[in-house]
Length: 392
Image (tube, rainbow, N blue to C red; front, side):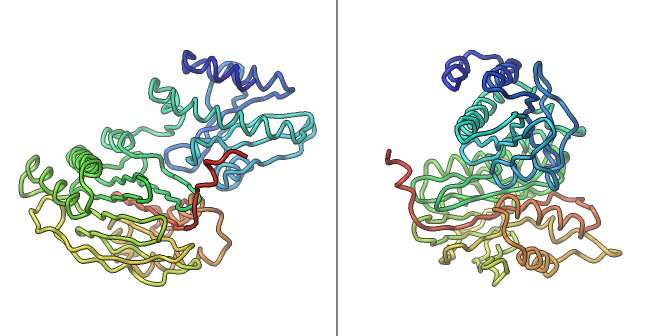
């Protein structure tokens, strides 16, 4: 079954993925197949329309078997009158694409193993074919999206990445009107490279600046080594393209995933928060540097060392500067209080925890997100991953 899907996937048009998957599942006694994709606001799992697919109402991420499978990246089985409804996470690498749902009369260990491998292959095919079609984008979009938001979503890397040594997760609000906020990361050998940016202004001007900033960052990351050189390269690109009256705040980081050592450059951003055991223990101090585009001197690098299990939360000023309760800024103290309150509950995994924090913060701000508000979290786990390259 897996071989047939793999053999055909290279030439398979995007609209025929769903019918082929439904046919394959039917061969082992499965029925009512649904492919559920995460919407851009990370609130719903939306059924992909398609021939031979079971298309029902969207399922909430927060409180449903499908949502539990998605957030925890685990198989969920629900007994029903006519069999067992299975929800299998669609994982591209470690990024959750969505959920494959189907019903079986009964489920054995061989079925679970086969369906788990099928869901992984389906996720890979969906991600590959997504570059060739708008079909999946249209399914995920639940309301009109601004041009600037379209640009930003096309810039973003996968929202999550998980390895045995490190995990990352990011979330961007307002999902359908974002403009100047963005983030990027890459894991090159033992160094996790990370950037969180906030371009001044709104709408297309901000999106254009963010595009140049991220493009310059990626170029510098692939050419230079030091954080200081990355900053200088981005600074030169923004000042040359937009002149002295435009700027981008930025936070740049190197994390050695073998040792937990961090290097930081902070160019106008709030300082990251260090979370240990579910509580904020302190800010990660940084040597302040002028925002990108102002022609600042080469920045000084601040170094820190993490403990295993530590999390680092980066955020843009849209989180803490939103006006609430008659005009008071939301503020960093309220952000820390939200982190600490949520940290009292058992962790559901990095992505689930960050999503819960984002939605909690939005409720605390009375649902207001008048400026872009980005959260990006890194969890350092330590250890090694060499065992994954050894065949038993």
